[in-house]
Length: 273
Image 1 (tube, helix red, strand yellow):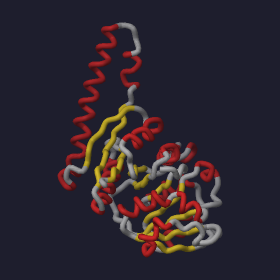
Image 2 (image 1 turned 90 degrees about the vertical axis):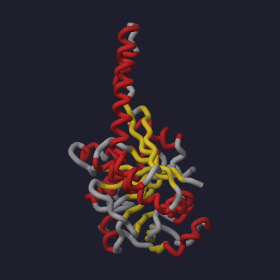
Image 3 (image 1 turned 30 degrees about the vertical axis):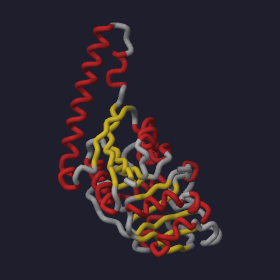
Image 4 (image 1 turned 120 degrees about the horizontal axis):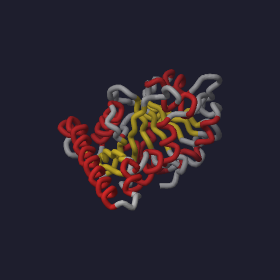
C-alpha cells in the first residue's frame, strides 16, 4: 500500500531541505509526498466579515489573487525536486496556522510520517522554546525533524525509550518508519528488562536493532549518540518531559535543535494510530 509523507513548506531553504529528505526516504517504498503550505485565512477575513457587499467582494478578489500566487509559488518551489524525483510530490494549500491546523491536515492525508525543517533555537526561541518542538508536541503524529543546510544521508539512529513498554506502545510507528529508513537502530532502554513486552511486530527488523541499557551520568543524548557513531536521534515526545533534563540529559527542544547535527525522529505523545 502506498504510504504518505507530509512535508511542511514555507518557501524557505530549510523546508526545501525537508522535501529532499522526504524524497530520499521515498526511494525505499512506494510513497506519495504531500507538500503542504498553510495559508492564513485572516489575510482577508476581517474584510469578509463586514456587512458591506462591495468590501466583501473586494476581499474575495484579494483572496483569490493571493491563492493563485501561492499556487504558482508552490509549483515553482517544487519544480527542481519534481524534475529529479518525478511526480511523487503533490502540492497542497490548506488553511490555518501550523500550530492550529497541522494536526487536521496530517489526519486528512493519513500521513505515516511528517518531515519538517527547523532553523534551530534562535533569538527569543531560546527563552520561549523551539517553534518546531511546539508543532511536534501538539500534532500527535510521527515527525522527522531535519536541520537547516543540505541533505545528508543517515545510517544509524540512537533512540531512547524509558522502558520496553514504551517501545511496545510505539511499535506500529517504528515498523512503518523502518520501511523508510533502512539503516540501524541503537535503542537505549533506560529502565527494566530489555526484553519485557518486546513487540513481535518488530521481530522482522530485530537484526537492525542494537538494544542497550546505559545511564547518562552527566552526559546528554547528543554526546551519547556521537560516542556510538550515530548520525540521527529518536525520542518519544512528552511535554512534561521537556521541563526536565533527567531522561535525556537535555531538554527535548534542545534535542530537536541539536546544533544542526542530526535529524530527529519524534514519536508522538499519543501512541494510538
